[in-house]
Length: 164
Image (cartoon, rainbow, N blue to C red; front, top):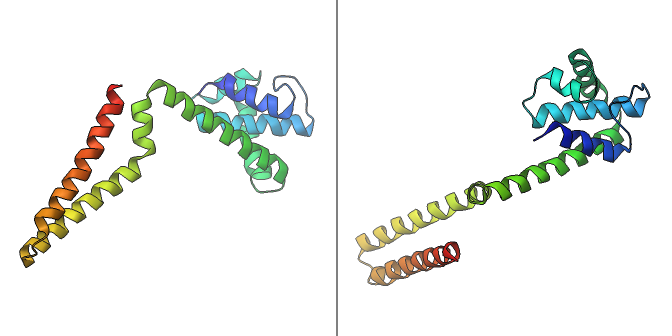
């Protein structure tokens, strides 16, 4: 994530410029929200975060304290809600960017839990078939063929989609 993207998102939401020299409450809180988001979404050092809005690292530290002590503690609920809105907006932007750059990895991460659940369910069904076979059930072969056909059918559909 880029600092200018975060800066532009905050500026757009507050309809103000973050790099102007002003001590009005709304501007101070907007910069504090920018500092918090920049710290969460980037690995940039504090002096670069501050340089983007023409401030130094000490001002960034102070802005983070303002956020933690005033905005985050629900003294200013409307600003905290704005922070959450901007945060979800930036998260969506990051995920769309990741989806565009590496779609295979994006979907693998997105559906990781479902894939693990399917794998566990498949293994559970195989164990159940083994137990049924040990008990001498006559439908074990039919159930095993059915399970394998389901797996192979899904695998064929997936391969056909990847090839086209």
